Length: 103
Image 1 (cartoon, helix red, strand yellow):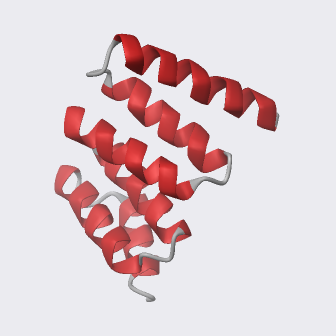
Image 2: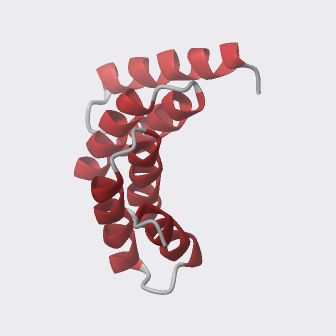
């Protein structure tokens, strides 16, 4: 997908959230767009908003990835641990936690 598409997507998710502020899926998808646009700080805020509305393993893993991009390893590790509460054997979360901890 081209860069412009991600920018369009972010704008569309913003519009959805103005109409439906409790739409966790839109907040999550906006975060995904922001992360792909190279805006991890904004993405982390969007993922945090999505998690307040709808906690999920994928939400915590995405938050962790955004935090890793910001070199906030301790916070990223916390997010990956939160994801593991949903599925303690999740190989993606386990690998990401190890990476965040420098292992």
